[in-house]
Image (cartoon, rainbow, N blue to C red; front, side, top):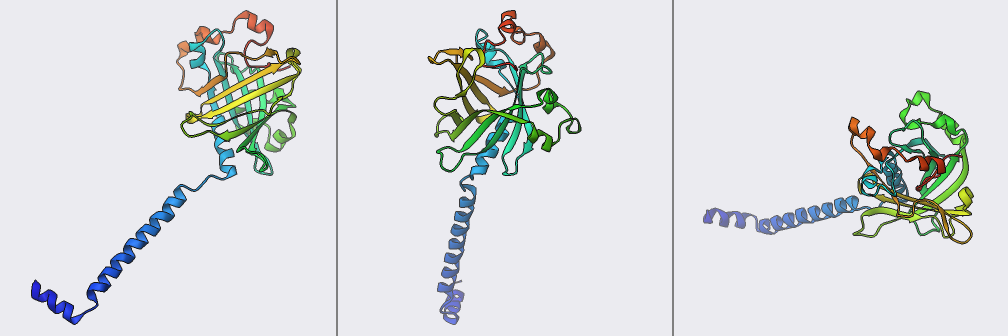
Length: 271
């Protein structure tokens, strides 16, 4: 082996250097390739990426059942169902939302359009979520549960966008927090005249696993809360298929005084 190596070196005096150079080149290529791949994997999200994440997180069927089990004096088992309704010319996502008691999903007491888009560049936020009333609201009951050919067309949906109600500005949550995005209406909220209120405020948090926390409240001129739950936000979580026996849970039957007063939590029923 020794003699052969000596003869190879003698016949090719640059062989040792050439091999080392080739090895260095391969290592450099691997390092550069790894850096490029890492940059792609860690590439920062665009403004529209954040809007898409929020829209996707809001969508789907969610329940407040766990919270109602923990604190039945303040919270009911509410079903919140949200789905895409249309896309605006500028790329904004228009979602349809309805809320109902779990046992009567066909009778929603709240129906809204949510428009989700990136925050204006001049504001220090990531995603803007605005809520709107629906003009032909009766036509949209159980919109998400119906076959598409039985729903209003996208152009009809856009034409049914009614009065602007609220706008929430969401920001990415700091590392270590449970949430992904959180935010609220601007200071002073938005005009609201239900049950003696003069303005209302809304808070929204998007958590991992598509969990959503919402807190809507109404206040009078003196700052007294006149509607909305006081104990904290409603917590909506995606739920697995419920058993038949759940249908008869006391959590799903609001007390009579709730129906008479029309509201005892964080929900304003349709006028």
